[in-house]
Image 1: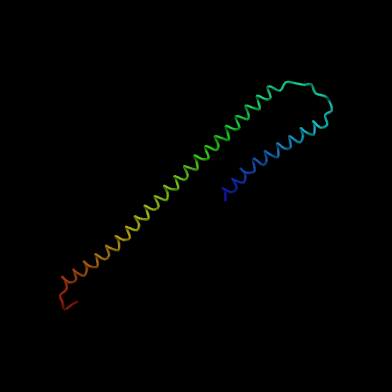
Image 2: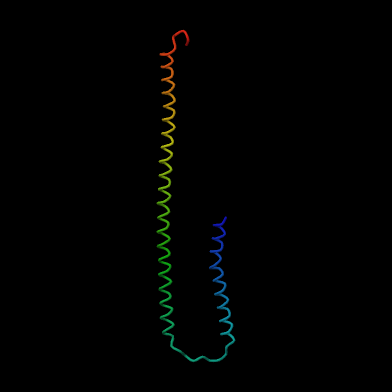
Length: 125
């Protein structure tokens, strides 16, 4: 239950960020729409370089996230395989123990009948 609530909160954070970003964009566009003053031409070289650097950083972050996701997935598969192997090993030990217990019971009954045959005279049997 707690896990689902945590995932719900974590899933709502990007949605809240999207809503906030869209509101900021809406306010910016509304102010630009109503602005009638002509703006002077400026060089946008710095803006282009800034956007290029942020684009590269975002692509790198996505790449690292995908690599980490794959790494975690492979580790979990190995963990599950190891857990199944341990479970199979424990099950085989339990089966061997059960079989040994049955064999011991049979051996005890045989020894008991042998002792009965040795100790009791033939009339008392």
